[in-house]
Amino acid sequence: MSARLIDNRNRRVGLIFLGVAVLMVGLGYAAVPLYRMFCQVTGLDGTTQRVTEAEAAKVFVAEDTMSIRFDANVERGMPWNFRPEHTTDTVSIGARDMAIFLAKNESDHPITGTASFNVSPVQAGKYFNKIQCFCFTDQTLQAGQEMRMPVLYYVDPAILDDPDTRDLRQITLSYTFYAHEDE
Image (cartoon, rainbow, N blue to C red; front, side, top):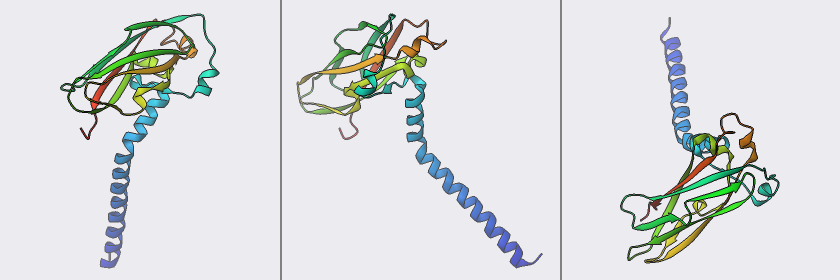
C-alpha cells in the first residue's frame, strides 16, 4: 500500500472522528433544553404543563374532585419567609382554581428569587396545568416587602382516563425559591 493511500485513509478517519466529537459537544449543549422540552411535554419528573387562557377555556369540568396540597420552601440561607396561604384545596377536576403563596423578604436589602416547582406523584405532572404563575418569572422583593403570589391552574380531566392516575385523589404542588444567580 502506498504512503499516499495510507495518508488519505488516516485523514478520512481523523475527519470522521472530528465530526463525531463536534456532534457530541453539540448534543451536550442541546441536552438541557431538549430535556426541559421533553419533561414539559410528557410531565416527566413532575413537570407541570403550561397553558394559555384560551386553552384552559376549552376544558370541560368533571364531577370528580381532587385535593391539591401546596408546599413551599426556600434554599438554605435565603432570608425569605415563603408559604402557601392555604395548605390544601379541593377542586373540581377541569375547573380553574387559584392558589396564593405569600413571600416576605426578611433581609435589609432587595433579593431576587427564582422558583422551581414540581408535582407529586410524578405521573400527575402531565395533567397539572398552570395558566398563570409567579414561577414563570423572577420575583424581586425589597427589604421587608411581603408579596402575594397567585398560581392559576386546573387539573386536566384526562387524569381520570389514565390507569396510572385515575384512582389518585391528592396532588402536591411544591415550590422552592432560590436566590437569583446574580445575588
